[in-house]
Structures are given as C-alpha cells and as structure tokens.
Length: 134
Image 1 (spheres, one colour):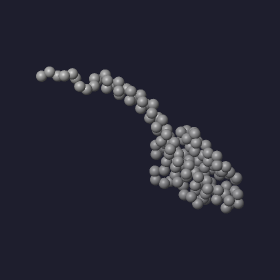
Image 2 (cartoon, helix red, strand yellow):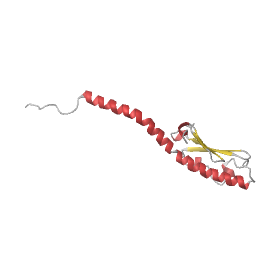
Image 3 (tube, one colour):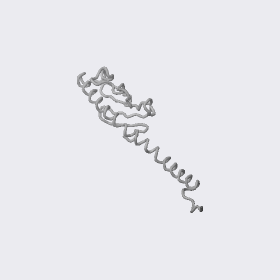
Image 4 (cartoon, one colour):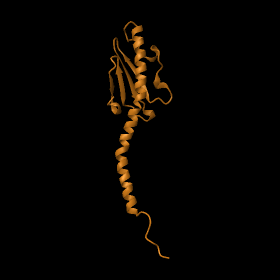
C-alpha cells in the first residue's frame, strides 16, 4: 500500500508554535498578575473606609482628639486583618488632631508584604508598591 502524503505537523512547526506561545505568555502574565493584585485592593479600600468612619466617631466622642483612637480596642470596629484569609493587615496611627490608617498587603496570602494603601483624616489616599496608582 502506498501512503498518500504525511498528515500532521513537523517537529519544527510545533517548536515554533511553542516559542510564540511562550513569548506571548511572558508578556501577558506579569500584567495579569498586577491586575489581579490591583483588584484585591477593593477589599482594603472598603475596610479602610469602615475603619476611617469608626475613628472619626471615636475622634468626635473624645472631644476632637484622636489620641485614644489609635487601636482597634478603642473603636467600634474589629480588626479586619484578623479574619481568616485576610489579604491585608491594618494599622492606625493617631495623633492629637490627625490620623492615618494603613493597609499592608499580607505576605502570607500571596502578597509582597510591602505594598501599602494609606488614607488619612482628610480622605487622601496613597499607595505604594503594586498599589502605586491608587
């Protein structure tokens, strides 16, 4: 019996396709991971807003002084960073008439442990690391 032509791909064609897919993946994956990480900031922004409102209530209740509002035990909101699988850890830095609330990406949940989002009494937000554009 005669064989009519070879059907299928050559090894060279398969290697070229694998190389093209690898190059595309190497360009797309870092952007994808950055986008996923940025989307996780929604959790931090929601919690920062809740904590900020609670610190504001404490500030007003203490006679316009935030000195005693710098710990979660002093405000009416539990630390959201202590919930299971929390993506961020939270901290409050309170002075007499100002405060800053910081959300730091939790390194044990896949983050870098250094990226932060901060919000102050005036409502100004700042981000560092992958959250630099916030």
